[in-house]
Image (cartoon, rainbow, N blue to C red; front, side, top):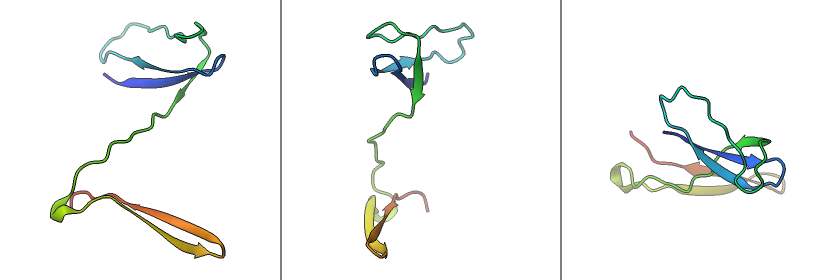
Length: 81
């Protein structure tokens, strides 16, 4: 049962809609704030990070200079080895 996030194009409110998997019926979506049916789907943010990997590896961030006056950032996300 996926949950999708939408932004109303009329008032700007962000809202979510749960879709029942396997349901073949058509679903009507309207902004809960203003009732508009003009909206766009947005990519939801996540703040979930999995626990330590093998050997106690933890997520990490490395920032270094990559060109004159600029910096580059790398994210190390542990996973299966």
